[in-house]
Length: 122
Image (tube, rainbow, N blue to C red):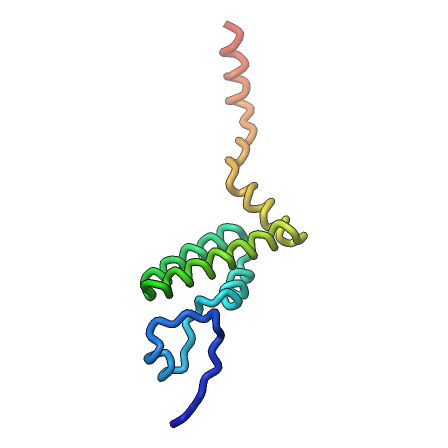
């Protein structure tokens, strides 16, 4: 059959013939990656999505397609990080990320504090 598929110029394909037959697009175009990365609720999630995209691209692609996918992934990550930095929700996510990365403060233990103070007397 003479079915035609609309192809985005930024879409990277594994095998053009195979992709054309199946009509399936490989999700390594910039716009698709931005949409996916924007679903991240935290920096940790965005980092996991980024690493997963790199792994999947490396596993599925080679040559120029792999380089194009890497560029699209990096651009999408940069865009989403800028969005995190410039929006209220993004700033909240970033602050929460920083707070979870820091060591949590020790809980106050009166016995430990008393022994520390008494040991300093001698």
